[in-house]
Length: 177
Image (tube, rainbow, N blue to C red; front, side, top):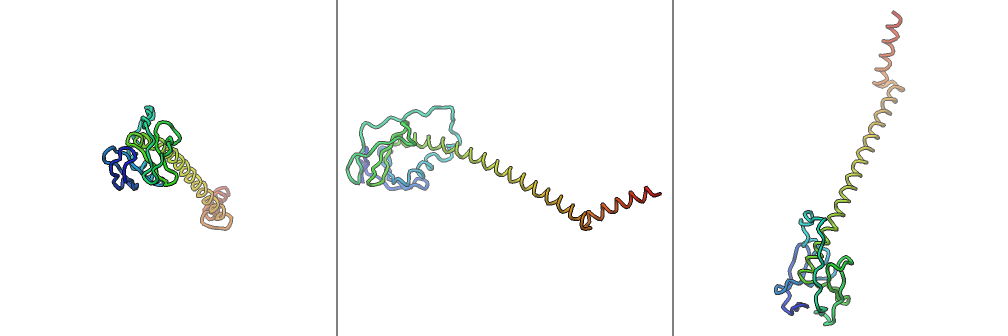
């Protein structure tokens, strides 16, 4: 199979969990639709935690031509990754493949990393809030159970009831003397 951009041979390879057909000549890749997210995960990797939110992401240059699908030979449809004009990728709906050059795939990975880091940070905060709420709920439940056990003991002569009864007896005894 040939690269839609430069017509060099595509090489099947794995990048992280993504299976891609990579062009060693121009750095472009042809991937199945369902491999786009694993590819973005592999490209963004741990760098997504180092991305500066204050730096703007520059638009990658849009190729001058619509690449042709290696499966059917028709022009592939351009789309902005995450609906943005910053990274232009191409797809063939008939063959469910996505194509991108290395600059646009890199920009898409940067966008993926930034957006997913924010999602992970929010999830982490939500998880921390849920854990805090669960801890306080468990503490309230434990306190309520302890109070309930103490009251039950007082009412039914358990150890706390015996301690209270002994204290009352001592107070009465001292008063009587």
